[in-house]
Amino acid sequence: MEKSYTVKDILKISVPILVEDVLRTLMGTVNTFTLSRVSDSASAAVGVTNQIINVVLLVSVMLSAGVGIIENQALGAGKERESSRIMMNSLTLTAVLGLLCSVLTIAFSKSLISFMGLAEDLRADGETYLRVVGASCIFQFIGTMLSTHFRCHGSAVIPTVIVVISNVINFIGSSLVLSGKIGISGVRGIAFMRLLSEIISTVLLLIIFAGQKWDQKTSDLFSMDGSLVRQFMSVGVMSTMERVCFIIAQMLTTRFITGLPLEVLSAKVYVQTISEYPNQFGVSIGRAAQILSGHLIGAGKQDEAHKLIRKAYFTALCFDVPGCILCRVFADPLVGLFTRSEEIIAISKVLLTIDIITGAARSLNHSYSFGLKSAGYVFRPMIINFFSIWLINVGFGYLCSVPLGMGIVGLWIGQSSEEWFRGLMNALQWEKKVWQKKEGIQKETG
Image 1 (tube, rainbow, N blue to C red):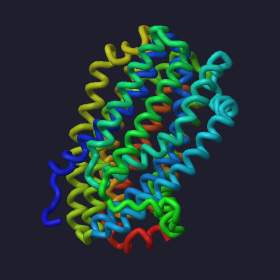
Image 2: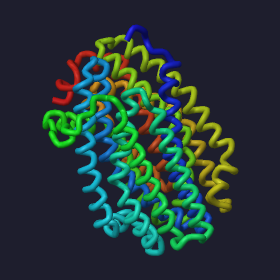
Image 3: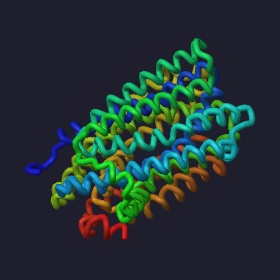
Image 4: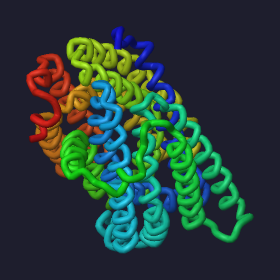
């Protein structure tokens, strides 16, 4: 590495990451939109069920996060053979865990839906969707890991193209389901189309991965390095604890409002669907910065990595807040894509207004949080994030929504408060350079 990275370098990597993430989000949006044509109840049931799927997929996210951190530092240090072993070992572990999660999700679908507290008339749709989409977990696990390897090697465009193909399949399939031109309809039909698109995209990624010249050795698939696996899991768990807690917290806080009118739950699903798009801009910048920062740290250029994450913060800020403002300005047509209910649209406008304040805090987490992960400095942030989410997001959110009677607005206030606290704490740790005092991943996780 002969030069420092600039904002242009961050954007060069973040654009394909953004396109891929947006298209993955779009798949869920298409399903929500299609089901909203059937009924708001079907859309609400699947929206809540998707939160369960997201929790299950966190296992994949945790593993790929740990692998990405270790692999980026190995590449930055010029350890190509070590990088190859990391890739192949991680694929084996991912396949085993993915299969296990698929089996467990299908087997306990009824219990999981019951736990979410859905109304009786929504449970059948929720169980149907969870059983079918749950079967795709193994494919989503492998696909997520393959995408991580491509990004680490600077080939982020490849997963993006595959996701485009997957979305086309899902869109065409969902349209056929809605038109009644095939033998399956409703929630079951939408779920099967998502399963099919995940299978095809994963197979395509595997074929392209096999053709790369990254010194892959098939024998590494069957020769697991115990120390590497422990690093994958320990670094992965700690680096994604923030996301794990947040998604589980989302499940619990959803229970706070399942007893409220259907319009409230529908508004939550639609606003989360819409607000995910501006959020993806900041996330893609953070993930790109993490890759570059990991390479710099692996090469011993900590000061350059420190400056890079600062640049990432200001870049993310330029996208996060304007994105939230645009969602609020165009709330009527955006929410109107899913429903014609004036009550749902009115509730959504209030939530999207609060999201503007939250967006400014997300920029902190979209940069400094990813910077800390790139350094392998994950233990102390994990502790802070854990207590932040449970005490502020869940605890304060519950206080505002139930005892104070603010309902879903109270949940959004709790969520915004927590995002600010966590973001400021991450920024403080990065700027104090406490991560430079650690001698790599081994010491921090040990």
